[in-house]
Amino acid sequence: MKRLVLESWCLLLIFDYVMRFRTFEDLHRIVRERRVQPDKMVPSADLCRAIDLACVFYFKPVRCLQRSAATALLLRRHGWNAEMVIGVQVLPFKSHAWCEIEGAVVNDKPYMSEIYAVLERC
Image 1: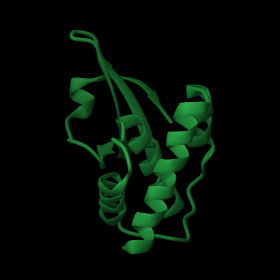
Image 2: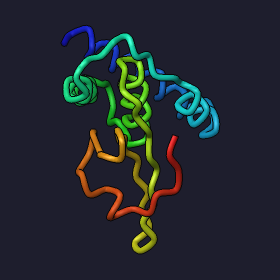
Image 3: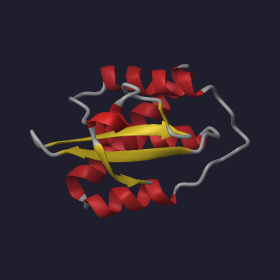
Image 4: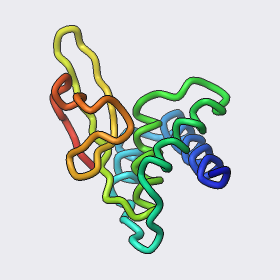
């Protein structure tokens, strides 16, 4: 588990850099182009827990986009066909990002797609 938390923390750091010094298009491209590595199957619950722990130990607050991008890449590295989903709520205006595997939310509340209109899946 320590290795997974460290790997998760490093992904958070990478996406922190991308969000600060690059564009949203760069972040989107990185997540979209990452392919599933089917030879390393680790339970998705363990991977999501590792991301949650890495967020606790991260040196600043982690935003949902950063967390979801890192989660999607971590899941794909370990054999899961995960999607990062970006949604929006019109009134009051809010946006949110989460991860899904086969349409099921894995790193947030299960009803996210009912609250937010889905803008993008990658």
